[in-house]
Length: 266
Image (cartoon, rainbow, N blue to C red):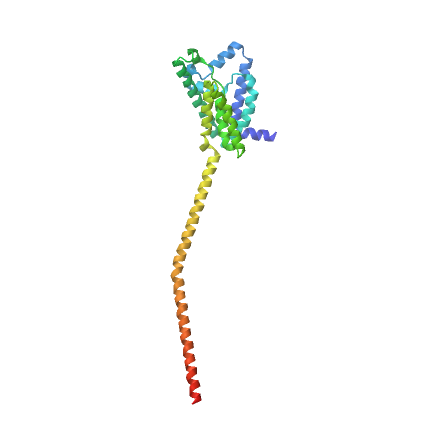
């Protein structure tokens, strides 16, 4: 259908990413148990892989999910969250938000694992822990989507998102929960990259321009008033002088008439 094509074209990054995840999920689902475990560990961005292959592990880990059976759930989440954010911000800004959050959350969470291992709070085998998936990017997109919604829906959505990620963080948090919190925070911090921020700056500039025009108009009116002041004063003086002259003339005429009347009486 036409609207489906338009929707996909408006968010190409989301659907390319989703297509790749679909392919890798089919690979895991069709592979033997041993091969599947090998692929999951080999594509993880854990401490071992980050030390051996830092850039490839950061990139590749974002295209696999551990449980292929959850693929349909990710389809729904991608369409609701990623697609809307990408259509709103544009593909490049969307990619910067989710890609940056994926990298930052992965590195921060694995640094937490490393510190726990060095502090003897976790076994050294955690250097090979499975750390794949798309949830960090999804958490960042969910944070950025907050600015897309209008009040009062925005506040209800915000409460729901915070509760969804905060409850696991405060009740037996894992390194993944910590990574989700980092990614969500980066999504909130992506406000300057959203069209809402650009619109706010434009409205502020318009208001400042309107204020400047109003000030200029007031200054012009005051200048005109100052310039017109002497002219009005001169006109008033002229009218007063004319009135005085008229009164003098009337008085003269009245005196002349009296003399004539007196002569006629003699």
